[in-house]
Length: 462
Image 1 (tube, one colour):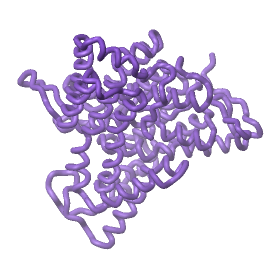
Image 2: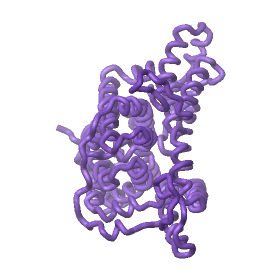
Image 3: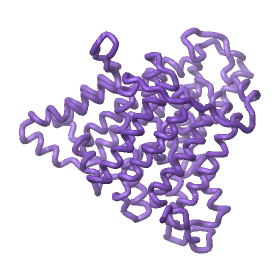
Image 4: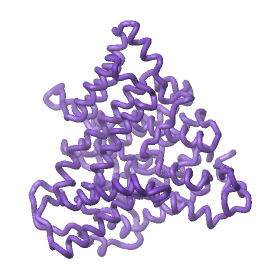
C-alpha cells in the first residue's frame, strides 16, 4: 500500500537541477530536508501561534496538533499534495463570538469539532460527486461574502480588546508589519507576521524600561497599571512537558455560530490544492475531495483533545515557490519539529506572553486581510456586483455579519452575526435566483466556478 513515505534522491541531493523542481516523491539529502522542514515551521509560526492565542487556546497544544494534522494530511493524500496544516485564523471570530456569550474553551472546541466533521463530509461528497456539487450550493458570490463577513466581524475585537492595551505599540507594530509584508522579498516576506511579533516583543520591553508600567486595560474592562511584557509565567514553565488537554463541550448556539466557517475552509483547501498543482505541473483536481476530508479529520482530532482546528497554509506555498522544493519529506520533517516544540511548555509560555498592544498592531492587518480575501474570491471568479442577484444577498449578509445584527427566535435562542449573515447570503441568493428574470441568470453563467478546473488559484493567506 502506497502511503507516500518513500522518496527518490533528486540529482546530487544538494540543489534542484537548473529549471527543475524537487517533486513531491523526491527529496534532497536528509540534512537539507531537515533544514527545509525547520524553514516550513518558521514560515507558519506567526499566524499559527497568533491564532490559538487569540482563540484563548493552548499554543503548545496548537503546535503539537499541527504536526499531527500534517501527518494525517500527508498519509491521506498519499504524499501527492505537499502541505503543512496550521491553526486556522478563520475561527478567531467564531471563538470571540462564542466567548462573548459566556462560552469557554470547551464550548469553542466542541463547536469547531462539529465544523471539522461537516468539512470531512463535504470532502467525501466532493470525492463522490465532484467539485460542482460545492459550486452549485455555494457559488463564488456566496463564498466571497461569507469569507468577507467572517474577517470583518473581527474588527471590534481589535478595536475594543487589543489596541487599547497599548495604542502606541500597536501603531508601531502595525507600521512595521505592513512594511515587512510589502518591502521584504522571498522567505522574509512570508514570515512578516513573525517578524512583527518579534519587533513588538522587543519594543514592549524597551518601553517598559524607558517608561515603566502602562495604565491601560490588561485583557479586562478596567484600566490598571501593568507591564507591557510580563514574562513571569515563562520563568515558571518547565522545559519539557505535555500541553494542556481538555474535552470539548457541545452547545447548539455555539455550533451555529461556527458552521459558516466550513465555507471558508473549503475555499482555502481548494485554492491550496490548485496552487500546488500549478506549481508542480501535476493536476491535483482529483485530490481535492481527499484534501478537504483530510483537513476535516485532522481538525476533528485536534479539537477532540482541546486544540484548535487546522487548515492548509499558503505561507508554506511561498517557501516551496522560493526553494523549488515540493518534497513531502520536508513536511514530515516539519511535523517532527512541531511535535518537539509542542513538548516544550516554556516555549508556549513565551508565545502566550505576547503583549496585547502587539496583538493590536498585528490583528489590524491580519483581520482586514482575512476579510479582503472574500473580495479576492470575487475577483478571481469575475463576480459581477452590478447584477442585483449577486449584490443584494451579499450586501445584506455582510452588513448583518459585520454589524452583529441579531434575530431573536425564542427567549433562549437567537441568531446573529456570522451565523445569521451566512444564512441570509446563502438562502437569499438561492431564493432570489428562483424568482429572478432570465437575463439576470444568464449573466450569472458567465462567472468562473470556484472549485472547477481552470479556476485561478486562491491564496488564503497571501
